[in-house]
Every structure is written in C-alpha cells, then in structure tokens.
Image (cartoon, rainbow, N blue to C red; front, side, top):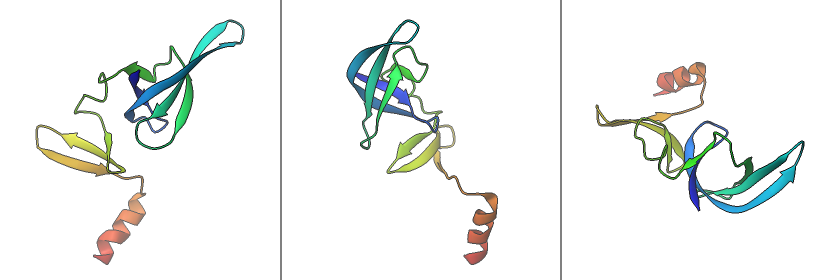
Length: 100
C-alpha cells in the first residue's frame, strides 16, 4: 500500500508499507515499516501517527515543499515560479553573493 509520509525534515513524501507488526508496551500498538519511494530509507512508525496519511493527501498539494532532483523546492502556483530552499546560514549566502 502506498501512503504519504512526513520525513524528519517535515517534508511530505510517498512511501510503501512493506510490513506491519504488533508491539506490546502497556497496550498493543501496531507499527508500519515504511520504505520511502526515493532512496533506500526505511522507517518504523506507529500506525496511528500523524506522519502517515492517505496517498496524495499532502503530496498532491502545490503549497507544500517537495523534493525535486534531490533539492527541496517550494512552488508558488500564483506566480508560476519555484524557490529552492537551502539550509545554508545567512553568512554563507552573503559570501556567495560577494564572490559572484
């Protein structure tokens, strides 16, 4: 089953549920092993987690950031442009402007 899954960086991706298991803590909790569609990452998440959603519920939205060709991109449908979101600090971006 293909689902939407939110990765640790809060970006919604698609993934496949490859296995479910029951674990017993104070009560029985069902876990889903999910393999992300892009990459080799696998993650075990409680089935009722807010990080799992029906396929297309979040990944089908244009107002949320997505990975495109390995980069985090935010599209603005009204302006028809895409912004690449980077994790660089403001200091390093100023240095790049000075170098060019």
